[in-house]
Length: 455
Image (cartoon, rainbow, N blue to C red; front, side, top):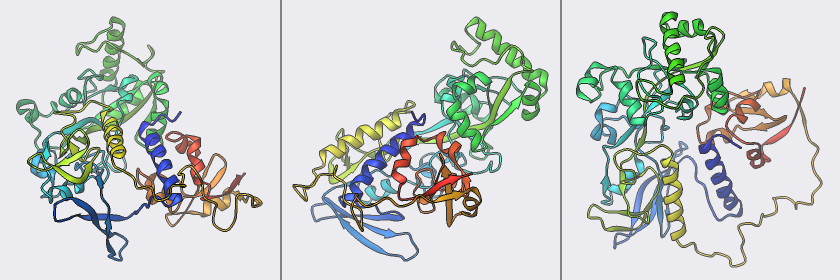
C-alpha cells in the first residue's frame, strides 16, 4: 500500500501513458508551452500552437480534431493582471500548495476564443500548509494533510491554547485561525497588508504512530520536529511550560468527557497522562490557497462552453481548469474525484482513430538492438564511495532498496518537482522513497538502473 493517494494515482496514470508512448501512439512533449488554440472558419478548435522552453525558441503547431485542457487552477499567479489579483486581491500574499505552473494558462487560452468563466472568486483557503523553517517566506507550501488532525493533531495559538475543533471543515478551521487578526474578526475579510498567522500543529506519540507514513515524510522534509517532554515542546513554541501543560491537561479531561467547548467529540491520539514523558511531533502551519473552484464553464460532458453557454466544438476541459462543479467551497477529496470523473468522461467520448487494426497497446515492442532473448548483462556492483561521487544536479545517482539509479534526467519530470530527488543525490534514498511510493514503481526505472549497492 502506498499511503499517498496523489502519488499513487499519478504513478498509475504515468505508467499507462508511458505504455502508449513506448508503442508510438502517444508523444509527450516536456518543457513545451501551448501559446494559442487554433480554430477553423466555423470556430471549431483544430489544434494548438506551441513554443519549446529550451532556450532555442522553437515554435510549431499540432493539429488535432479535439483538444483537452487539463492545466489546473490559477492560485500561484500573483502578478498584477492575474485572475487572483482581479477576483480575490486580498489573498495575494497567502502562500499556495499548487506549484509554479498553477497560473491559469488554460483559462486564458480558452477565453481568447470567447469561453465563459464561472465562480472565479471562489478560492479555497486550506487551514494547514507547512511553514518550512529553512525557507519560511516561500510562497509554495507543502500541504499538511487533514489526516494529521484526524489522527489527533492539536492546533495551538501563540499563547499555547487551543482555539477550535480541529476536525471541523476547512472553512471553519481557517476562519478560527484568521480570527486571531482583529481586522478579520471585525470584518470577516482578510487584509492583504497583514501577515498571515502561523500556528503550531502538535501530535502525540500515539497520533504520530497512527499517521506514521505522513509523519515520516514531513519529518524527512524538515517540516516536523521530534521533541521529548512537555518542557521541550514549550521551549520550541516559546511559551511558558505551565500554560502549555494546562492546555493538554484540559484536552485530556475533555477526551474523558467525550466533548470539548468547541463541540469536538472524537479524540484520537490523546497524549499520555505523563506529559513529561510524552514524545511530541510538531511543526508550524499557516492558511494557504489550495484550490480554485472557479474556471471555464463546461457542461456535464466536459465540453467547454462560450459566454452564451454554447459548445465550443473540439474543446474540452477536466479538473481544476474548469469551474462550477463544486459550488462555493469544495469538500476534501473531491478534487481528485473531479479529475478522474471528468477525465474519464472526456476520454471515453473522444473517438480514437485506429491507426493499425492489428495493433495492440498491450503488446510490448522489442527493445532496440536485439530481442528479449539476449543474454543478460553482468550487474555492476557500486560501492557507497562511488555512489557518493554522483552527487550533483547534473549527475544524480540515488540508491533505493539496494539498487542504484541514475535519476538525473527524471528529476525534472518528477511531478512534485526535482528538489526532493536532487537532495538525495549520491545518497541512499530508500527511507524517503518508501514514505511516499511503493516498490512496484521501480519497475519503470529499469533503464535508469546502474547496478547494485555493495557495502
